[in-house]
Length: 170
Image (cartoon, rainbow, N blue to C red; front, top):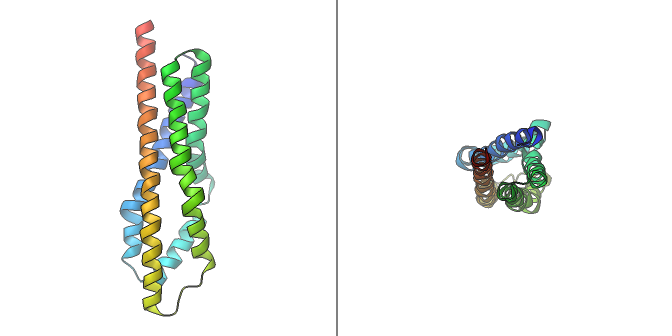
């Protein structure tokens, strides 16, 4: 067991859990709350959220989760425990495709479009636009939550497998 791998594995677990929890919280509470207020207010609030989420703490969890999973996988490959290493690498891949990829391809472009568009003066048109945005954004955010959760489970299984392998070899 290498100390750097133990540290990166623990950080991977924490960051992946934070990212999965954030995506989950948006789908089951934040977006529902925004759907309950006036569409023009929901649009303004979402614009503000989209600007404020771009901060070092968010980026640490969002970008750090796959990076630390990758580093842990590589460290474990170098040390020998192959199955745990593969699981950490799989966790990184799942997260990169389903959380990072969806963010870049779907959610960020939607956020940019919302930010660039003026809120319609007509309440019915504002309601139509918000509803379309919210439904699609939440659907894809839920995809991010599911992939992040799968990545988290892979990290947990990798850690357990690694611990079992270490205990069995002692």
